[in-house]
Image (tube, rainbow, N blue to C red; front, side):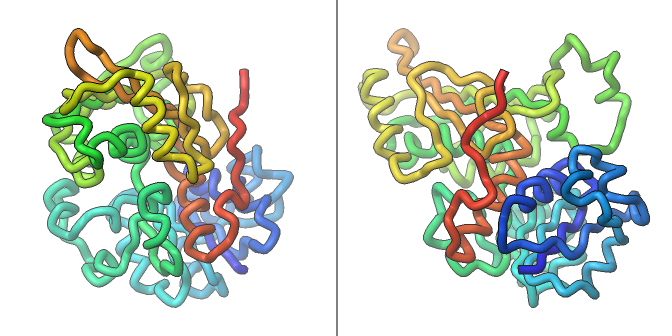
Length: 333
C-alpha cells in the first residue's frame, strides 16, 4: 500500500511515520508540511533519519498528485476539511477534529462553518474499543481526540451500564506535545518547567466529544504539565447503585477482555506507564464516604491519543491485525 502523511512535519504526523515504518506492506510515498517544504524529513525529525533520511517534505498540495492509496491527515482543526473532499478516492484517516462531531456541534464549538458536510456524514469515529464493528471497511475515519479517548475508555463502561449518574467531573493532565510543534511563549521552557496550569476550564473543544460518548454532562478541566508526552485522567461521578471496588475491577476486566490495548489495573496508573505505546491503562475505585466512583486512565497522548489510535483504526478498517505496527509495551524508566 502506498501511503501519504499530510502534516508530517508535526509531532502527530512524525509519530504516524515512526509507526508505519514497521508495517511491512506500507510504503510512504508522500510526506507534506507547508512550513517545512523542501527540507529533508531526517533533518526536521532526527529521530526518523535512519528510516526516512532521504525523504523530502513537500507542500500539502502535492498530495493531490501522489499515488497514495491511504492518506493520514495530521493538520490543525479547520484544515483537514479543505483537503479531504479532494482525496476521497483514497482511504483517509484524519487525526484532526474536523470529522469527529456533527456539523452543528463542530460549528458551535470551533466557531466557523464546516466545508464538508458530506464527509461528516460518511466519517466513522475511530475509537476502536467502542466502534470496532462500524470501522470495518471504513473509507474516512475520524480519529478521536486525546482527552476524549482517555476519558471515554475510563468512564463509558460505567455510564453505559447506568452504574454512575449525574455530572461527570474530569480532571486531566497532559504533556506539552499535545499542543503541537509550533512554539509559543506559553510553552517556553523557563515558563513551563517546574509548574502546572489549568486551561479551557469552561469551554474546551473536546467537551462535546466526551459528552456524546459518556451520555452525560461533563465538567472538564485540562491541565498542562511539564512533561513531553503522556496523559493522566481522573474522573468522578455519583454511584447510581451500591458497588464495591472489587466489583468495579471485575466489571472493567469483563468489559475490556477482548481489547488488547486496554490494560485494567487495580492500582492507579502513572502518566509514564504507557509512554511510547498504544496501550491505555484504566482503573476505578469506589469512595464509600462520598458515594462516588473514581475512574482513572493513563496513556501516551501521541500514541493511543493520536497516531497509534489512527493506525489501530486503519488496521481494523482494512481487516488487518489490530496491533500491526503498534506496541503495548511502554518505555521505562
